[in-house]
Amino acid sequence: MASTFFGLNIGVSALNSFQVATNTTANNIANVKTTGFTRQSATLTAKDALNVTARYGSVGTGVTVTSIKQQRDLYYDTKYWENNSCYGRYEQKLYYLGQIQNYFKDNGASVKGFSSVFSQMFSDLDTLRSKPSDKTVRNQFISSAQSLCTYFNQMSDNLSKLQDDCNEEIRNRVDEINSISEKISLLNKEINQIETGTGVEASSLRDERANLMDDLSKIVNVSYKETPIQNTNGDNLGGTSFCLFVNGEKIVDGKDYRKLVCESTDIKNNQTDNDDLFKIYWADTKMEFVATAGTAGGSLKALFEMRDGDNLENFKGKVTQADSYSFTVSNTSLTNIKSLNLPDTNGKITVDHVTYTYDSWEAEVDADGNIKSMKFNLSKNKAVANPAAVVADNATLSAGSGINERGIPYYMTQLNEFVRNFAELFNKAESKGQNMNGDTPPTFFEGITATGKVYDFSDSDAYSKLTDGQTTTISSSSNTYYRMTAGNYSVNKDVMNNVSLFATATDYVKTDACDIVDELKKLQSQTTVYRGDKAESFLETIISNVSVDTEKAETNNKLYQNLEQTISNQRKSVSGVDEDEEALNLIKYQNAYNMASKVISIMSQMLEKLINDTGVA
Image: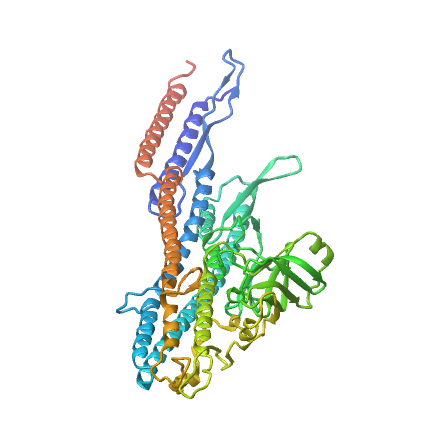
């Protein structure tokens, strides 16, 4: 049976509940400009009814606040993180592609690129044709040729530095991932300490965790799974088990987190890769963290795509022979020795999803340098488990990273392929002449490494003398045009010091003859040099590639930037603080509080009448 003061208790419950609701609304209003704040609402529930013996059976006992909850929508959170990951990826790609595009600029005035330098070289060659014995004119042409070499040297140096920048940013991103993961694991512990056994939601800590996940989603793909902690009877204990996943792999499990480690490696994917590029692996399992996997995203993926991207133009072939420490392949994807982008040693190859490193390679080539087969001599740190099965399965050998993006290695490979083809054609034409001393001229374009080692491509000359049907074997250490790169491309130092060593004609006695110059002139616009096109079209081909990639990155960057704003607005419509809505809530709870006060006032008057004016005479 309800007590005499039952109505007062109901009024008091209403006062307390609407006071909490008003305080919650006030807190929302106070944080209307707080970044990352999630709107909270008080959940008001009728208290358990009181059974009575009267005919009406039971009466209500008032209202109570069962919880103060954040207003979030997992759907919008997930969409935001997915979009933010794409936005982070294309924003990062756009930055580096913009750098590459700037390197290839050529306006003929303030910025002199390939077209300007190449045209000047052949303009000086035209001048030389009219004065073949004039040493001043000869020197001018040779200086122009060295300027072309310097252009490629600088391009190689710029791209190498850009690769180093990518590599350093990868380490910074991994440090960010570790830092955020550690903070989330600590927040999980604090949240559970507050929520377990009390049912009170640690709203501010949950906001902090959600903000960290927002930051993390721009670096990698993120998702999470949160489940209530239950006892053996299936009753909720108030806390939750929170697991965070990056690129589909668990990195935080409750109060524990896994650490990613950046480790430099001497194993290379491409011939011109810088030393000590980082790979990422899990500290606990030592398994590699693949940042470019199908489930990956974010700026970290973009950094690997730019650092290692080869547009899937890496070396591939079918395994025809194998033993414990070697693979021989044929039907190769790169068919000419001048197209190879393989490291000469410490290269990475993959066969049947197993990764190996090789110490050297050997190629069987014909007179044109076309590859008939190639043998990889593996390092002794890992043997082939079942060589016969590999051959029987007609397995594919893949070298390098095989990333379907045009990154720095792709553009380096294009530079290398051009200088190799152009240098070989130029050197072959020049070798047919006689210099002013009546001798066969030395190799005009050669490779000079930073340590001073000179490659004159004598082994390429050897295989070029093979007859039809004949083949020979060259190795990764052979003195072939494979050894030439944009970084070591140079004019022969002897020719630069003694211009009379350059040949302009097949007969040096005829001092005014220029048949060699005429043949060299054809290399500008009449001879196929690079990928089925003329030499002067090289820049157009490269620029078209980088322009397409930059435009794609820019378009996607704007798309995901706009989508981010749209999704963010949708998310804020649920979890953000709306000033008008909160003002209405404030008035609503104020009116309800006033009504509850009126109830207490009336009940007080009734009790006063009962106590003071009712009595026994």
